[in-house]
Length: 206
Image (tube, rainbow, N blue to C red; front, side, top):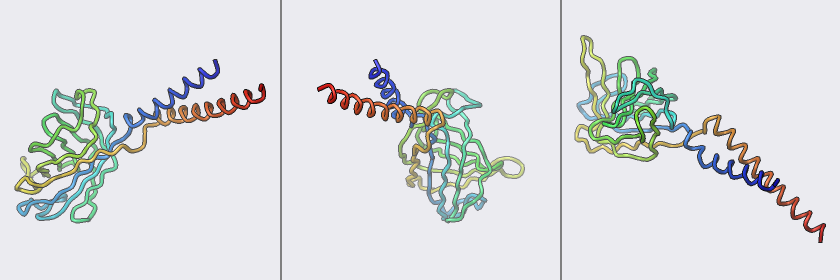
């Protein structure tokens, strides 16, 4: 009976370890080089390399959803322009089934992966899961609000032949997953002790 309980706890722990990454945070990472015709702005300049990373939950909490997109909050953004870190003050990113993402870097700037870029989530827009992998994105655009309406655009690689890797990497599991992991590890220890005790008892009975 005791062995059955310990074995059950062990299986629960191992299952929790296997599923922990499903509740992890993921890191989105993209980089490229602006074209010679790029608009000069806070996050862009002609012929200059850039990179962006930010974190979202692997099972993101959504808001302002439609049939093709959802919004969620992002964290820990790092934007670099020609190796210099540029402050990011936005909080919202849009993921869409029509393109990869549209992230708000500040109140006036959107950073968009469009033009044939892949969908980066599975499931519905109200219950999405981020998809782990690396992707070639033909073009990134920085869109700046103009005074009086409209946008100034700064596009990466005007010939659309730039490959951008969007690598989703599992990070620290959520607190609930950590609890299950600890339970699983404890069960594994108990099982080892039970086996040792059983072996010792069997030898004494011989």
